[in-house]
Image 1 (cartoon, rainbow, N blue to C red):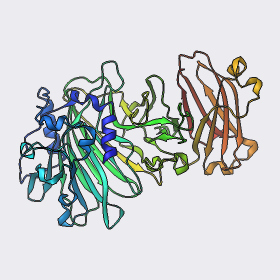
Image 2: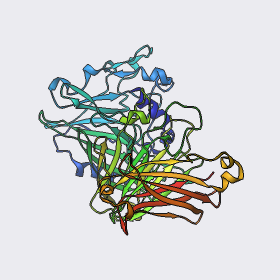
Image 3: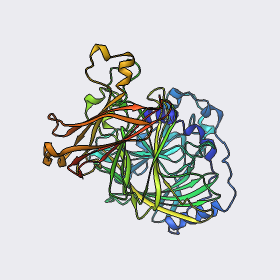
Image 4: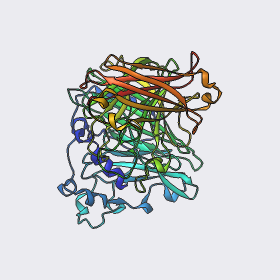
Length: 520
């Protein structure tokens, strides 16, 4: 849980959560069936009223807790909801305070009606903190987490957690927390500033003893948007979330980001550490993968830029996109604490037709690995109109053992820099004339059937780049192929876009490597 709090603290986006706070809607136990349509009615009614910021009701003692003090407050596992009922899922709750000062209401949907999960200070261990719990009655929760048997049938691991704004994250078998997802993104990386919608209320269906999935409903609110969300959660090697959402805009939205994913990239194969560090790579994700509506697969390696870098890929009806962690060996990272090789890849599969739009990638400079500096989402060309229902659905997978990849071949690594250089050209003007060197490795079953004489590469650079050299060579060590590139940047203050894919004669046999060389 400590890493969750640390990551939540460092999310630069959560620092602005005050822009997206919302009031609770009144709820009471009822025998009336609760489902998505009932929640949609609430979201629609909420959108018809002016936005109201929630009232801050936390005692100052909770707001003023230090990071370490806040970490000491833990939910008592023996108090987990449904534990004594022998159900396949259990619930634990996050205490408000420090970074999470706006609370949420959480309800249970049972056969006999809807009831509140009520805050009880005795369900928490406050550690060495001296807090007068008599002043905490009825304050609510910061969020919750779900536990289920993921790695062993005899123990319920933490499976998913909802905490802060509309953020949530999940785990599959053998995984450790890494990137996060969000319910919605509004005006990310725009001059007007980002608005952070927030899940303000949750309803969780009580599962049957034999249930293999858990259904969660969430009400979203922000100054310009409300929404009804349904999450159907299934644990496994890949933990799967089937997500249905219906939005209601109070007013026009500049840039709407659907299925937002958030991650961290500090340094890796294509960008070595600027300081002395024994670890070869440090990142939760190393690339953005896209399966376009036309069937093309694209791979964009991530970077830690010196300035804000926003790029996008226009298409119609995307088949999928995700922030992926392709490097899966411990030796790639050598970090016994973080275990970056166990961080999940996050893959979005749209359901139905999402129409024309773009996958947008936002990369933000970060001074260290404690900042989530990568965001990816879908931006529809036609955002919701005020007070009109806007529906979309998708499947979100948290993967490690069988990640989504193109069937033919894929990029296994991108490395920047030269190999051996004669001392006479290793520095100075002669070195500058050599440009920037990049080495791209491809692997995959399609490459095994390609004759070496027919193996080639299609390489392209935009107007700011001049290709000085490109050649392809069979990689005897992997059975794949390696593409060598040298490019000269015409204007050092502008990026260079590069693309490359492998060919068998005139036929493409790999995904498209799509790289951006950030400005110097």
